[in-house]
Image (cartoon, rainbow, N blue to C red):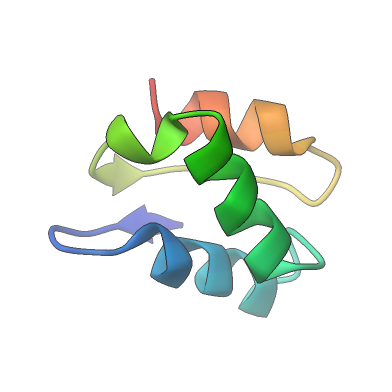
Length: 63
């Protein structure tokens, strides 16, 4: 998955849902915002899988 400049966390969440990595984009977007990951999401290419938890995905994209 690729995170590009200017992408909103809601767009990232939707992309994850479209690629069957998560089941609920809205729920993941809320998780990012409530846990302050939305402030630290980094641009780049990521390998994410459907067996990862919200925490694991968030830690990967906000590293």
